[in-house]
Image 1 (spheres, protein in one colour):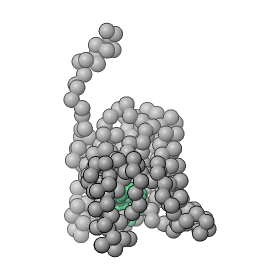
Image 2 (cartoon, rainbow, N blue to C red):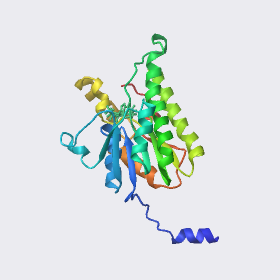
Image 3 (cartoon, rainbow, N blue to C red):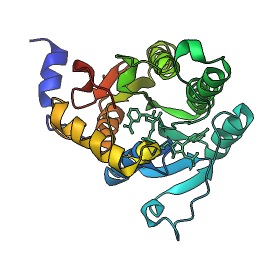
Image 4 (cartoon, helix red, strand yellow):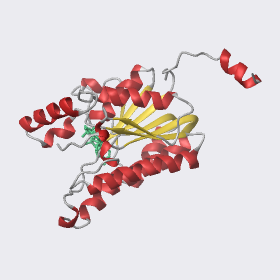
Length: 258
Ligand SMILES: NC(=O)c1ccc[n+]([C@@H]2O[C@H](COP(=O)([O-])OP(=O)(O)OC[C@H]3O[C@@H](n4cnc5c(N)ncnc54)[C@H](OP(=O)(O)O)[C@@H]3O)[C@@H](O)[C@H]2O)c1
């Protein structure tokens, strides 16, 4: 056995999910999946700041009481630069923002305004957050982006989202190389029960949930806390970088339409 293998045997072997004393910024962390990530990081001991466009005073949104808050639109590069200047040093950046800018539909029915606007917010917004946070990230720190199962298995009418998510996943791999030892990963969720689905009528939304329960290999719907769990793993495991972690209940293994 080598010296380093011997040393490894002396290291603690219960995995640590502890973020005590670490500073975590969750962009898009005031609702949905981002809020699930923020709550998980807080539960693991981190000091958490959530940032997004809305101002959501804790008096009206008690779920946000544990967090510091910032107002930030990630489609505005100058605002992103200023926000990370103000934030200063941090340990982990989670970019969970899910812009709804732009419209999309069948590829041949649309001009390019929808995809330009969507990619500008989701892809270039993720890029901007990484670009301006990176100088302030600790060397043991990490960046985690958020995509979706549709990156791996497209659906008709979703070309803009599929392509943008795939670009964000490529960004994670590329930045893992450029920014190391800062680690960079992406989480690819499947159906997660958030307000994102409010565009459906209550009956249609209930049908979708039922379809997910019946057809996804995990036989349940996903919750923001499932993605929060994965985010804490990515922040605390020091040897995971340049990867896409799917938290989808097996969504990409099956063919389904919502
Ligand atoms: N829910 C799912 O089933 C599911 C599945 C796969 C992938 N995803 C992806 O996961 C991401 C998050 O979705 P979600 O379900 O958590 O939706 P959500 O509850 O609507 O959360 C989206 C968050 O992004 C913030 N945001 C939007 N545009 C922004 C901008 N320009 N700058 C800063 N923040 C912005 C919003 O806050 P403000 O309005 O305050 O800015 C909101 O807090 C999306 O990209 C979505 O496509 C979701």
